[in-house]
Image (cartoon, rainbow, N blue to C red; front, side):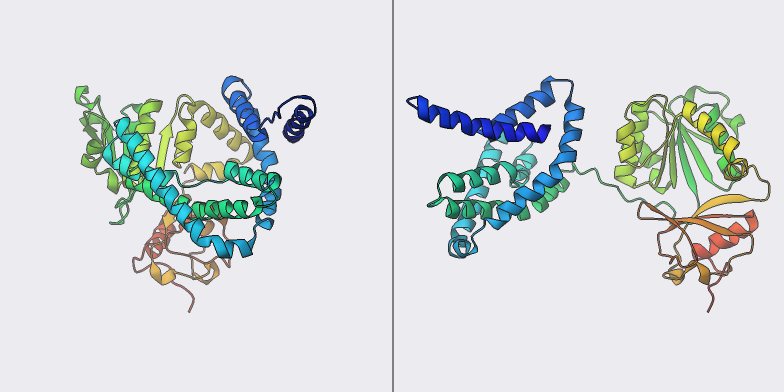
Length: 414
């Protein structure tokens, strides 16, 4: 229906033009591109159908893009381009100068920071849809010279498309707005460290459980200074004044292999975003009471735990797979599951079947580059892989030592 309406706009515009030329003393032409732009603007901003409208556009746009850009490419006259490329380059450079002057003057008038003013022009280079559409209309409306003009304009747009995105990315990185994953020093000393924000019964219980598994755990809380019973908790509790980057540096958050937040949703988001951008922490876990900031945390790769749904899901797993769930929760006395980061370069490229693992050890999966691999005998190991292994605690210690490069563990078949 949306596509039919779009074609109807173009048909109606040409019908109005023909009617006005035949029956009126002037010719009236309604630009279809502007009509569609205004209609979509109103629909997206002044009606409750924005989400449905965007979903429909995403579904119908690929075939339209294919037809449109194929037609545009087929209409390029390479013989004309070979003669006019110096003009195309000159137009592109003139456009860059105009964009720089306009963006710099506008930024100064708006009192934006000067570093932003000097680099904002880099974000305005890319152009495509409207310019291509208008160039195509010119070529149709003026067949004598419209084809050459369209070829020239399309050439400038193509160059802008090639140069624009890298400069856009460079500008975002230069002004510090990329918010990419940082780099910390977690795991460099082969000791597992966890940092928990929030002091309550669950955080203390989690700290004790992790400590029993060989982790070095620290709890950070702004209420810790008012609690007289900290020594009786049996875990490392550090009072803090605020949630800031300086505080996290003081807590040695860059060395933490995992950060757990048990605060309000806004505070959880602040801690996780800071850890992601400045320390690159791999394991971020947030306990959420509501779904506020849910999408933002998911984009950071945060593992979100909602107490109500987590309990229902846990009971469901106990009903359907009681043995696997008990094993996962560490309820089996002689079996455990661990994630091991493969750091030993001597095992790089080896297949799983070439490893002499203890008989009670099984590799369940391999996580690589954000994706999960279901392991089999021909899966090849790479440094940086996270390997999920099940087995007895003694055997898991042997496997861990070998994967991280400590002598005395499993060996590869020669």
